[in-house]
Length: 345
Image (tube, rainbow, N blue to C red; front, side, top):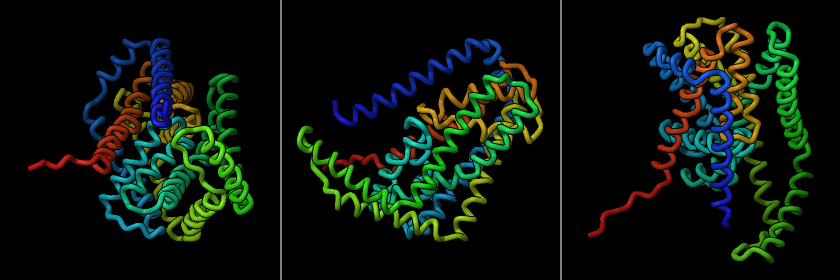
């Protein structure tokens, strides 16, 4: 079994597990009541929801454009939208939005722009960090809000707190690692070089890469990230747009709830969206199967609406913010990277 088939198998397993979880959730809540609520949803409100989704996509695509500008990668606004579609595709199919999508997204970006892989990886990693930077403080406020005002049960509170702490620990690890990056890059180059040489000896077709080559390429990646982090004005602008993106995502959830007949307080969705998104750290594609149950539990606890209505709103929200962008990402990947056969004479 080659590496490609292993990756495809991993993706397939993730979607199967997510489907099992979602089926179990719907069976518990009630298939008939949930789909009846979806069928009765206000069509005009759903159309408005799609407009807000498009605005969110455009705002975060602009964040990518800012980062590409810092790295001096030539692109047009259309290129930025196509490339962000590639990033969304990679993050939507890879296990764990925060950990699994960057390598594939970087490969797609480097092929599209013609730049080296290190530049592509630096751009993707920087954009993901910028777009998700506001999530952690918003999620912390949301967790505090849930613990102090909502009755969700001690077990659920502990589970949410655990997921939040795991993500917080991950962020802290990244921060500490970045401050000691020179030492870590040297160690990583030695380890990766040793593994490469061992693979060369036992895996047919594998080619050894020296530690010096690894250190040079890792150093190039770190230098690109330093360029991004050194442009304080552009970073600040990107954070403004990323925060606006979270506000728009919250607006999508509010509209989904309104479509099924519930006008909730704006602060509820402003907290539920980032708090629920913390569960994306779990090894499921794009948080599929992990985000939905968290949303349903929080919405029922914080708003008092029925579980079928909360589930219907959640599925409408995820249709607009996961499935539709994933479909668009598939199209952008196909347009950008699948060669078009030329007619022969």
